[in-house]
Image 1: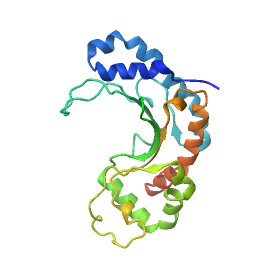
Image 2 (image 1 turned 30 degrees about the horizontal axis):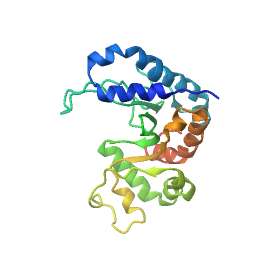
Image 3 (image 1 turned 90 degrees about the horizontal axis):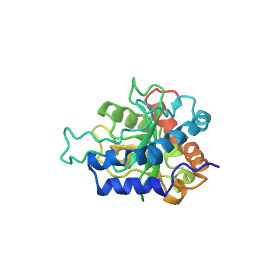
Length: 228
């Protein structure tokens, strides 16, 4: 069993949160490469056969540029917060057609006290939202099985951060899953303890989670005419 992240990984991210400036980051860039980015790339490589068993259409790409890892640099052009760096490291396990069409992704998040795995669509375009809502309306039974099965909900939460205050226009108020039709994000997630993230059983835990998230992701793919 391999370990990927260690206390040093969290130490770097905590330090970056306290000293979020380019001078500090450049002085500690070797720590970032050795304890955050490098281990994450190794994890992504080891996830490739795991992900292939879940879906042959998803990719875990460890390359430094253009792969699964998000840049740790923030885009501050239109942001009020001008701090230059994210205080976490994230990675997207993306659909093979994800660069041509908006597609659900799996996502891994490394942050002290806030590690998690997720799947779905975050802030999708309005046309994507419309297609998902209509698909749920037309296929409520399979939505119940994918998103509300007791085993699934014992392990995963559905993101509740952003909801419409009322039903979207044209959808019935008395629909069984009216709450779901008001969602702005279709995301399922599970928190991962820091001890698991830095422990020897992380890869096995992620394998369990990816398989557990598969029916939810498959449903969203079907709503968008994507292979799973």
